Image (cartoon, rainbow, N blue to C red; front, side, top):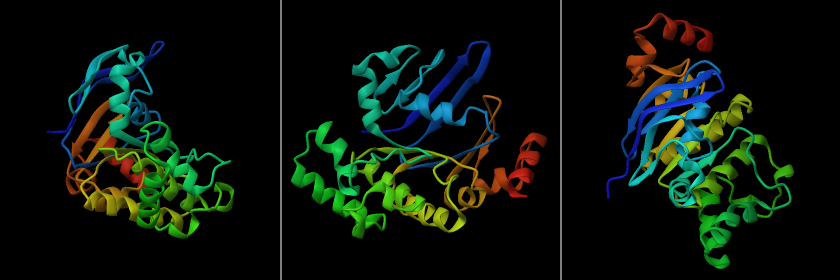
Length: 248
């Protein structure tokens, strides 16, 4: 079955403020999108609308065969299949502090999907090895560095066997060495064909790993295209100013 993401004329408002203004975007299966742009431009809001964490006021979102419309986020029959399609990874990790690394990774598969504990642990072991955390299964979050926590968060998201990953500034709180650890894992996942939408200010990573860069500014898509086109030859003055500020 074809699995793609289609955002059609989505509008999101908070009171009198428009956060997303008639945004349309199509993402084929297996594509990696780097969402860039100034703070407050709507990037994180778009991610949260995609998996039903935020409602929206106009337009529609299709994720594979599933559809979200304004207000439909409160209907679990519509929202749950979409949330299971995505793994979402946040800037602040959101690991359970009272659970070990292994228990963090198996929590959702066992409780939500009903996977047997032994099967979930076997799968978790493979995923922890994949993200370079095989030796930390019995550790607790407070014993890990920021980069290690984020790699565990990636393994936890993958444990639900999602079709895509939504990553919201997941390296912004990390120092450069730890950023590279996490970005290296994401590049591996890209090679495996996982669909990824990444809100990021890591322009070098966007250039290296993204299939397409999408610039979201003031709730609208200002530019989009292959990284070399958007990053090296911006069409708008606003894009050029943003890149100069981010790249120093």
